[in-house]
Image (cartoon, rainbow, N blue to C red; front, side, top):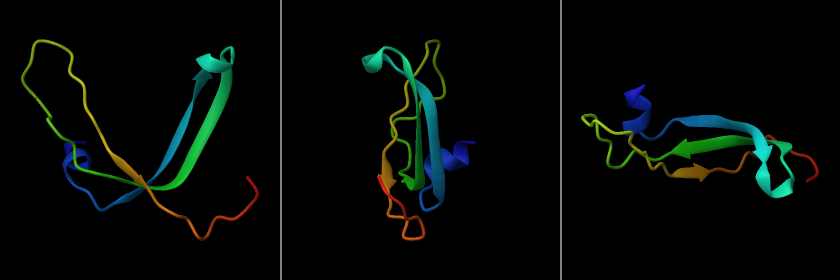
Length: 69
């Protein structure tokens, strides 16, 4: 959705999983309970090549989440 790339203000949960090349390919999971994306910069629509998209996120405190670690 382009709207999610050009508007800020909504909060999302960010979950990533993958393999950590620095630790012999061991799997990892990361969950960030509250993030807010800033609007996208330099979003080009017309091109013959693959493009890249730089995003900035703000990680927010989640007072309802508690635990160790």
